[in-house]
Image 1 (cartoon, rainbow, N blue to C red):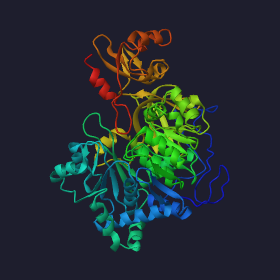
Image 2: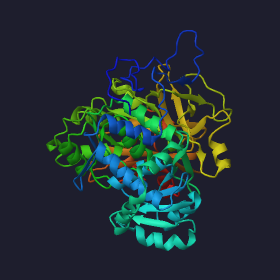
Image 3: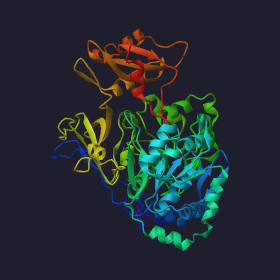
Image 4: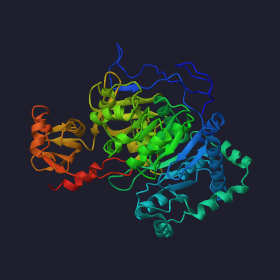
Length: 567
């Protein structure tokens, strides 16, 4: 975190912090090749810090400002207090035999201890392994064994999950697991107390051994077939990604960032926590897991300036009974990611939630995660029709999925990204790493995209989600965006299902605005007639109360396809 020195707009200060004014990037210039390639430029270099050293800079610059607020428990930490708490936990981990490169698992819901583990493991060179709170025992066992976790920190329980019982169930099959500490249990306090014999000099010596290129985090990507893969990320990749996401929404030490998104995912721990601490801002935890009322209450009470969420979270907040009674005037910005935002939802977020500078981010776990982002002054079309421009210090290109050749601007193909943000690899899976990252260090995202002449990227679907109906390539995103304008539809997901005649047929899964008056298939066909090509009009429809979701708030399209494949 740079010192708070005076800055000149558009130029770097002594700490490498920028009041951002990027160099023009991505747009087609006269005489250019007009290929689908863009690279992000900025006058500020990448940070060369480890996460621990960057936190030290924030503490030195803003010791008395709030760093972390947990609304459910009422606990608060200034940066100085947060730094002491991180060091206490780091000492406890060292006292319990955690060495550089050891894997420390965190299996917990959103809470202050989660954040402390994130920064304490980074300070001592351990590799924190994020474990999805929704995992059951067989998934937990796989991650414990595949990552070689020696120390596990877990919640006691959440909803129907008894974490202690599941740990005890799988422990006999996980010989490398030495210790388990439970948040809210005497074992947690024992972990902290055990570090009293570790001196500040010992902690400093441990940190002096670290490089910003060391691995610091393993995140398991959602696997639709087989087990998930552990994307391994470095200090350099996630610290810089968080920093630049925060730069592009204009974070300063005055900002207070409400995070209802899960910490176990990059959205919470990188775009949230690291974006905040690298700018001296405050992280506000509204609840252990997403609840729309808790979120709006936290924004109001803590006077948050920024709010995060996937579109379904914002939809739930906007549709909350009594929404208009919450005072959200403190909001200025926020981040929406995870899936496309319907135009009407974005209009309401800007006008009714006061988030005039809300930003759309696109990325994936393997790229730390953000590759493209809209800017603070982008208009409605760019915020809903695109996922922004490439971030500074990152490259993107769109290639023909079959040949790997870069396609012309305006042509759909697979989006690839390259730069500091690309993962080190999948943990101990070199073959799968090679399938995703090519010899040129380009990460192949699996997303179908178009790079426009103005440098903005449009995501038109997943390669695996693309529907091929009678030889026509159909992108569900286009149909979903169109159907969001139907007066009877609150939300919609479009998937392809098997069909004997056309190979695949289009299924629209609809959540109606009024459960007692859902649209019919004929209503949808009439709405689409003469406005969509005939082959893009859904031939099947299912009315749902809600979509199956991942813990991070993404719709599980694969489940919808499987559920309705038989017709």
